[in-house]
Each structure stands twice: as C-alpha cells, then as structure tokens.
Length: 234
Image (cartoon, rainbow, N blue to C red; front, side, top):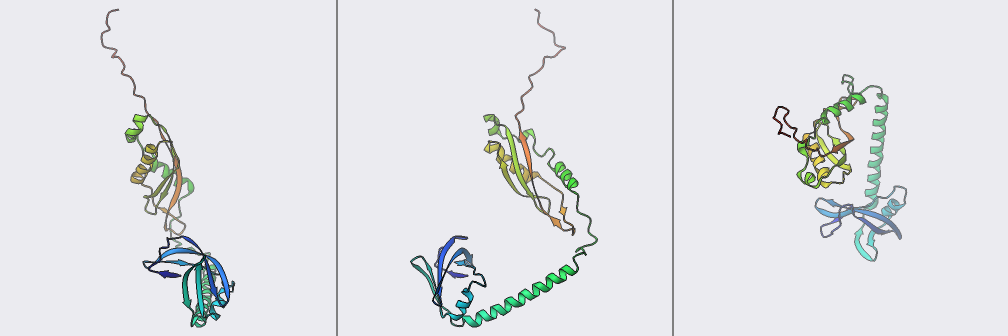
C-alpha cells in the first residue's frame, strides 16, 4: 500500500502501473483506496512471482503510470524487513494450521449442544407467510397510480436481519409503475416483522427471499336500489 495526501485516486479505481526494481519491470494492476484520509493504492504480488526476491536485492523502487512517474522510493533495509515479514508469515501459517487441526479434532461436537434446533424450511416459510399476510392493503394504493389507472405485480427481493427486521428490499421484477414499485418496498421495510431465525448453533441468522405483490384496482360497486322503496308508476 502506498498513499499520498496530494493524490486523487478514487476508491476501487483500477490503475495500470509498472514497478521497476533490480533491473526488472513488473506490470501490475493496482486498486485505489482511502487510507487514514490519504488517497492511495494497493497492489498484490504472488509470493513466487520473483518480485519479493528482487525487492530484497534492490536499493530502489520506481513506480510509473505510463509515461508519468508516480513515485521513487529508496529500499534501504528492505532485505531485512522482508526476511522478518516472511518469518511472521510462516508463524501465522503454522498457527492457522494448528487451529484447523484442533477444530477438525472436535468437529463432531456442536458449539452449543443445548441450542434449540433450527426451524425446518416449512416452518420458516409458514412464519414468513404469516408476517406478509395483509401487509399491503387497498388503502395503500398510491394516489398517483390510481389516477393513472396503473396495475401490476411487483417482485421484491427482501433481506431480513437477525432481529427480524427488513434490512434491504430490491425490486427484481417491476410492475411497470414506478409508484407501485417504490410503495411496495417502502411498506415492506416499515411493516415487516419476522421472527428471529437461528442457525444450528442457536445463533441469530439472516435470510433473503423473493415475494410477489399484486396491485389491482378495485371497481366500485354501483349502488343497488332499495327493494322496499316504492317504484314509480309505469
């Protein structure tokens, strides 16, 4: 990672850079980011690419973007720093391997043997059905859609957080009416109350599902004559 307070690299902006050191050039893509308020970029090199060995031997690192110089760095002490970094990396790898072996050793024991079993798929679907029942009513019909005579089905992708509240609603199948689409997700976000889902360890989990909501204008029923009222003479 290299940063500079004067740079104006956008976050995740892709950059084609050339790294020159020890008489060799390495063309790599870098990606922009913000590092403690300073604009900069990150480039990843594979451990077996030869770059690290050349970095350890070189006394300089030149970085260019086409014909434009990006940075000129002295690499004094890079060999010692790289050796220390490799020792640290080796130690981290050995720790992770030991953790993986220990985890595999006890893989048959759940984290919480006393947790209630997670709900079945049918129970999840039924709870979702109850939470969605009557969530949108005729009185929710947008006035603009009524005036325009707009009807249609809205297919929404809904994400429910671990607390049972909607964290995201995205229209994946439009009704053709912006008003109906927007109203659907607005109502879902504000009214949906799902139960707290739990995984096999009894921990709260999230869920994402899709649901279709149909909007149809109702035709007012014409008033019926009162059968008890006297009829005008024919």
